[in-house]
Length: 390
Ligand SMILES: *[C@@H]1O[C@H](CO)[C@@H](O)[C@H](O)[C@H]1NC(C)=O
Ligand SMILES: *[C@@H]1O[C@H](CO)[C@@H](O)[C@H](O)[C@H]1NC(C)=O
Ligand SMILES: *[C@@H]1O[C@H](CO)[C@@H](O)[C@H](O)[C@H]1NC(C)=O
Ligand SMILES: *[C@@H]1O[C@H](CO)[C@@H](O)[C@H](O)[C@H]1NC(C)=O
Image (cartoon, rainbow, N blue to C red; front, side, top):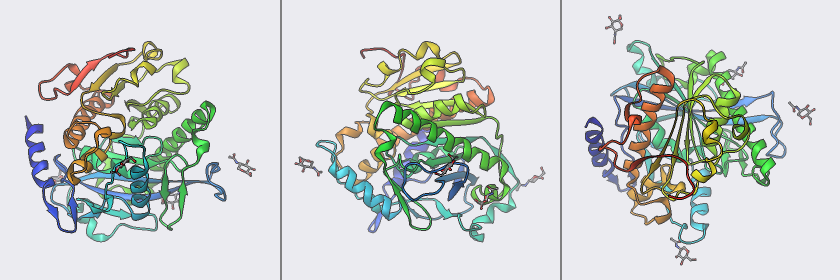
């Protein structure tokens, strides 16, 4: 019942809608969370999705837990260049998916610092009076096209339960990636033009995850910049990863290609690449939206998933609303039928509750918790198997 109580509190604080904007709820878990963003340069890879770029650069957001009450800030939810692009994109979709959402009105209750060019501000290190604590490291990969900011609230919420979360932007695949110098890389059709292009892109995304993990594990300078002080990753050899849509596929692929990843959550992503032939032997949680269009694509691969596997279906959800946009539309009072009928905060609460229990199982060998079976607390979650018809 703890979770129910946290939810009521979160809704109450979401209603504090300021004249100059809408404040997103504070994270409900036992920790507050810092957000640090940075550019990472991979000189060993060429950038093939942007002309004129000489090597692969990616952007990451890192959420890490800090003791409750250590700091408080309000930060913009999405930088202007990205918000402008996304607002135009949402309003230009074919009806009824076209929605007018003023993304710039949202503020997130998190201290956000770009650490690309140096140390975080000293004010942010007040938690240094506390002892070092270790937390599991969990990656997240966005859906095809989706800038990473669309998951910032969901992952802050998740991190507040005691996880270091690393969220990647995949340039060329994302509509727009903005770098600290103000330059941008826009979407490239080369990421999805053909089946081969999609599989190539999947490997580029997978390499982004491995490169980011390499940097975090070997580069102390980077770690000191992106993790809040006195926070340590519990392990760089047992790391969880989840993702939405093609990001879910990326999570699966990262587990296949890189032994340090030890469990994947796929939020409604089709499967591409090697998994279809070679299968999968890590714990896998597949979550489908309520239109039933994805799981038919999982049927052939399902028997090849040899480790723990579970499929859930979330009633009232739709593919493009499996991120923060459902909540944002709720808070802005925007009618958005193509994002699903579920309440946006309930959706995020459900994702993070099941993700916590999944990663406790996958990384720590704990019991299955909520994954044991249907729970009266989450009536929207249906335990299922991939099949042709709902
Ligand atoms: C990157 O491109 C350069 C020049 O086009 C080429 O010589 C080099 O081999 C490429 N590097 C990789 C890692 O593919
Ligand atoms: C969505 O598109 C339809 C058809 O073009 C239009 O009538 C409607 O006003 C649009 N809705 C929004 C919110 O832009
Ligand atoms: C830090 O750890 C020491 C030794 O375990 C303990 O005595 C102290 O109370 C801890 N301090 C905080 C702020 O948790
Ligand atoms: C380590 O990280 C810092 C900060 O991102 C970066 O400037 C530096 O080039 C990295 N070092 C290596 C060897 O990659």
